[in-house]
Image 1: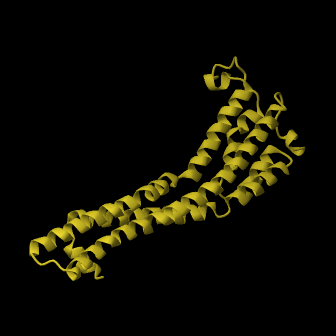
Image 2: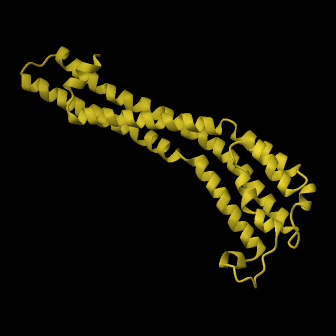
Image 3: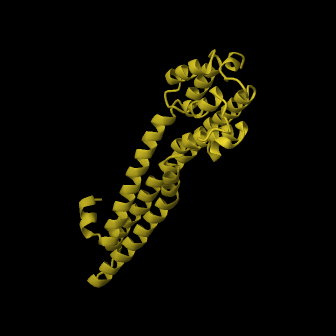
Amino acid sequence: MDLLHWWREGDAVTRGTALLLLAMSVASWVVICWKTWLLRGARQGVLRGTAAFWQAPSLAVARQRLESFDALALVLPMVVAIENIANKAVDPADPATTLATRASRAQQLTRLLRGALHGVLRRLQFGQVLLATVGATAPFVGLLGTVWGIFHALTAIAGAGQISIERVAGPVGEALVMTAAGLAVALPAVLAYNVFGRIIGGVEAELEGFAHDLRELVLDAPGAPAAPACAHP
């Protein structure tokens, strides 16, 4: 099939459908390549980072170690988020105290860790919606192009006044390519979405466990810096 001939013979709907499929394919492959780079060692990085944290003698040393082991900055944001609370107690009588700092130590830790965890997960899940959308809609976009292409071809053949199997097979076959193109765009997106979802789920479980342990670590020493407690994880 001559693509240039097909492009010249197609109308605005056919060309628009083809361009939409092309844009969906490019966007999904950009996300796939980026997330492959991001997630290729995410779980191992989290495991190495948490292990380095618990082996540190103090919170300050743990943060320095994380900067080396946590290359993707998946664990470090949670440590940074609770650092001020872990190293000092908040005086409720302080004029600078806000509603956020007036809450109990446990509430502050929960809020800060939740915010840091959600920030990390947003980074990990970025692009998942696009992959799901492409995987769900690309086959229907291709089917739309096929139906419209067949209608356009049959209308042109009927207008010519000469109908034969040779004249029908070519245009209809070219129109069916749109369905194949839609499937070709959708399949990589669906597979990538499932694989990335599994990886992200594992990383999320590890991060949630670490956030819980980190919260308990700080709460075990409510009146003192958390650094000494890090020596005995």
